[in-house]
Image (tube, rainbow, N blue to C red; front, side, top):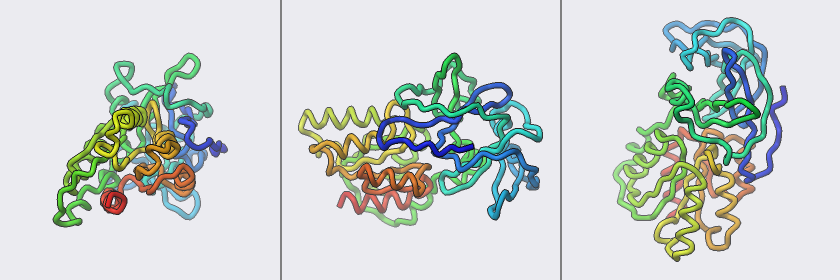
Length: 297
């Protein structure tokens, strides 16, 4: 199945692949998908996490297969169905699903944060919900699913300690990250690295509102001298935020760091075209601090 539908830069849209598990609709950002293949027999891994079905080699690379049904506490998948092979945070992982329904182009404005409409098991691993026709599609947080299974794939906070003794800095930095956990980890890491003047928000729209307010008040330099943004966020994504900042005479010189699990070659080209000053994959928290150091000096 061809998932390479190209989106224009900075339009605040994404492509959502809708798939099915136990008759229920779920979604994944197409930007994370490498390919979709029929289910293949896997080799079980002794003493592995209950959600790991095993490993297999569709070509020359060994890939870990994860049972999504198990992750959602919906039982265990049987043989058959499909593998959605993904790439994010520099990892190739296959997710076992029942079937694929199709691809929808949606705006981040129409994606709402999960609430009482979903169970606690799904809410904890959901980035948002979008209504397509008569059904609600839960977009799953695949990074959190993988990090819960193997914490080593998440932010490597230990890298901050390796930077050694740091001087304090009052350079104001604005952070846009919708994951509560990652938002806190980024803030804690920057504070540990010496940056005390931080504003952190849950999406690009909130970040842009702050920038516009500071611009009107003439206090931009006091509150925003660097922006760190995720790409995938409800209301407004990081690419749209980057485009707005870099297209405005008053804000175009503010350095922007895109810090996302989606930073691959194709996404880097998009970020560069929009004017991002640096782009880093999520686990590289130590590199994030080094890049911020260079940009704000």
